[in-house]
Image (cartoon, rainbow, N blue to C red; front, side, top):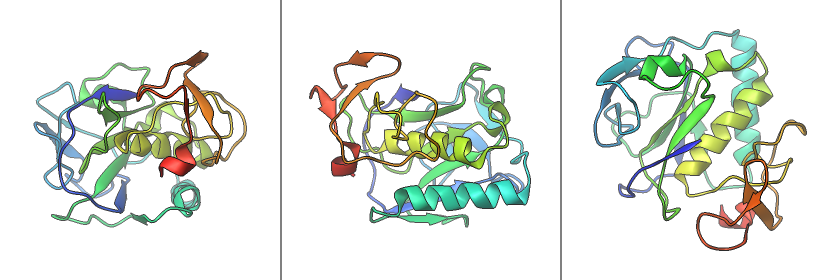
Length: 201
């Protein structure tokens, strides 16, 4: 799910998947959104830390491979190594939403621009403890949350990672004009009646 946030920052093509296994790597402070300094504008605590990724190395490796394959058609780089003080998007794949003061039922969350603008240097969350050990389920959430930071809305298209609809795993971006929505069609947040996430990316 996306949360409202203002656009800004410096562009990048780098996506960091963080399993929080390095001490303090997922220790966040509330403040202006910046993945380089571990500041988040959407956490509901002054400071919070995610517990490490709870599943096996095999699940993690399959998850990373799925994210890479999902984003392969687009000009981005996916890394498991902390880029440090360079522009990047970061998806933390670990912990529980309560760690960040959020509702217990959240599977993932991202900053969001009401105008569907690209938000740079965001930290997005895939709360692994609210998933089972399916690499594809984790991949679905992670890709959707990162893509919300790129301005993409939810889609009523079961094959797309931008959907809430279950089934059809793994999910891949489709070159299709899809209705937006969660469980029923609605106007897209950015104005058009439909969204083509493939063309957008």
